[in-house]
Image (cartoon, rainbow, N blue to C red; front, top):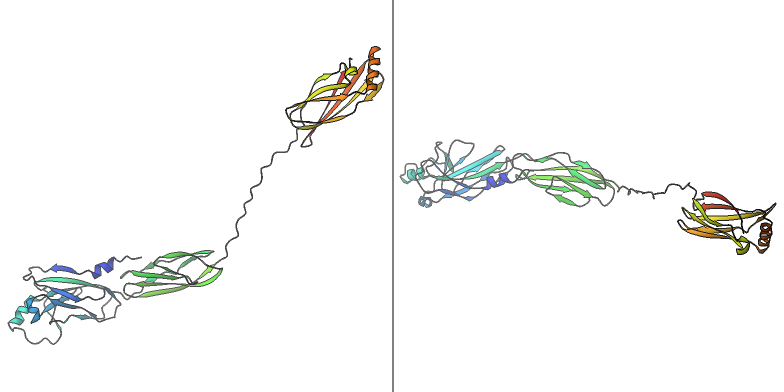
Amino acid sequence: MRTRGLLAAAAATTALLGAGAQSAYGAYFTTQPSAYARSGAGPFSWGFASDSPLDTQYGWTAYKLSTEELWHRCTNGVGPQLRDLPDGVYTVDIADDVDLDWAIRRNIFNSGFTQPCRDTVPQPPQTAWTRSALIVDSVPPAVSSPVVTAGRSVHVHSTITDELSGVKSIRWATGDGAVVSDVLGFAHVYPAPGTYPASVTVTDYAGNSTTRSFPVTATAAAPPTLIVTPTPTRPADTVAPRVTVAALKASRVGRSGALSFTLSGSETARVAVTATVRLGSRTVRLRPTSVQLPAGRTHTVRLAVSRTLRSRLRAVLRQHRRALATIDIVATDTSGNSRKLQRTVRITG
């Protein structure tokens, strides 16, 4: 968007010194024209006066338009009026016309001025002069078709230019009652999905304006994306527990009334233990037992021997016959994996 540099330049009044100036007197503006105006508007009027002592009696001043070669000498209190100027940037210089003051004072020129201002030779007055500016602009700002990115939050932007006088204001109407000002684009969240009648109005410093209307489509918000993080799973356990049998005591069974040993395992497991005792040609089954074996710990298992069986053991041993105990062990872990062990031991007492 064009800055306000032209406005500052056009509104500024500059004092300039004419070459070979013979007087310290000068002219000054009593009213300024608008810095910017539409082409064809007008008339553009300036008021100015001289600070010469002769101003009260004669008051001759002069002005020159930047597009002309001639200076115009004007009567007291009368300024130029310009109209129908083509688009462009102009300057207007004014000065105290000391040469004409001198001529009128001597009654050299006292007639023939039927217009407020009279064209003269191109040479400027021999005094300091002051400059004003005028920018005539009849072309409205150029506004491209707005680019609309639809969604729940709608993004809109446009290319806006004004080559001569510059952009003064931009007004976006979103279509739902909101207004956004002095930006090349905007983002707006609409209250509900639908199509809204939006518009943009751009005005330049000359008062020209351009309006573009366009539809804006707001869509419903996209549903949230559900991200499911799976719970890490441990690999399936397919390895049977390792069980160690130790301290198997087969002596003094007839007296202690029990067959004992220790168990230890690599993991927690449920251990079922059964045992049989063979006395010669006869086999006797001991009462089975089941224990919970914690991982890494040792557990002592005692298999009770009934009083009747103990008596038979003693009788068999006195006859120097063999007595054997067979122990079957099944260890099952929490995943259902099982390991079977069997131990045979000779009972010696």
